[in-house]
Amino acid sequence: MDKVSLNTQAPEFTSQDVNGNSVSLSDFANEKNVLLVFNRGFI
Image 1 (tube, rainbow, N blue to C red):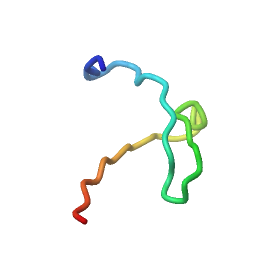
Image 2 (tube, helix red, strand yellow):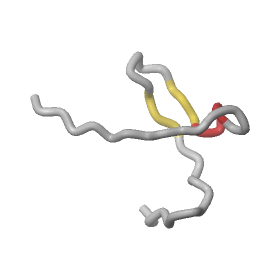
Image 3 (cartoon, rainbow, N blue to C red):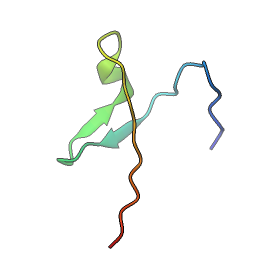
């Protein structure tokens, strides 16, 4: 995977929300700021 540089447009991606629904970055285009947090849990 390529590195992402500061002050550049984020690449399109799809991930799952906490409820298991697919969510794409483009779903929020021109609507909101997007903050993506990767949480490392311990099991």
